[in-house]
Image (cartoon, rainbow, N blue to C red; front, side, top):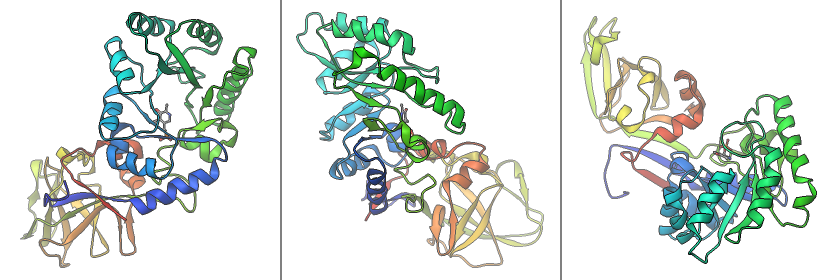
Length: 363
Ligand SMILES: *Cc1c(COP(=O)(O)O)cnc(C)c1O
């Protein structure tokens, strides 16, 4: 990737990422640190981020799908990997082949797995997923005891963990309720002496609900630098080089549909990034970019591969660096700001950036 001279790129600051990991480590005491790296590590690059995490002593990785886990194993990642999403029958053997742990969240799925492994002497490593209020996947706490008992008597299951997921961390009451339900379940005598890794906390759990930190925690957004903590900062920037410059007369429409009209003669520069890269079209006539440390507005509709910026009477040359997300001089365009303009959350903005934009890892 790094040899291709593409005029737009994502810069990942691994030094900052490592710092974030160290700070989280300091916050979680003796808990194991599981880093979810699903969706290309929230757009940061699955393999590079996972390698860095492994080197930094992160204990576990989590992905959503089998395929992400296989990619990690093929890249030589050795630490335990948990596949969070519900699995399908035809995935059972590859999950074991690649030494991936996975979630069991129903008797139905447990039977499918057991059936697949009837003629296979191998064991699979699984985490029992409990639904404490998300209503997505997972068995209800009441059923969890029965399912655990059931799994225990099937030879193919090595139950290594039990977990749940927080649904509503903006609301302390609901979150505390989920924590309480999960902790009550864990106190059930059936789990005594079972050496299960219990885990519940995501980023918000780690930041705001220390009581949700059990044997392991799963913060991801926080590790990438988003969260209310003085020493944690983003490690992601999106940059490009100006690809074109022109002076446009007054009363001219810009880009598809002429959604922007110049009010006076002005200078327009073109940036070679578009929604085909995952840069949201929603930012048309709303977003801004940084050039020479100053903010300028995006004008007209964002195209698939490029968009335009109005620099007024200022100067900027073709080839100059533009920051779409990140810092330049004293100015900053944050992922939170971009997400706000698009009426979405930072997670979505980050993971929409696709493979057309190369990622560079700086230190
Ligand atoms: C994605 C995910 C996480 C990480 O969430 P953050 O809010 O980024 O910390 C944790 N647990 C599960 C089950 C997830 O799917």
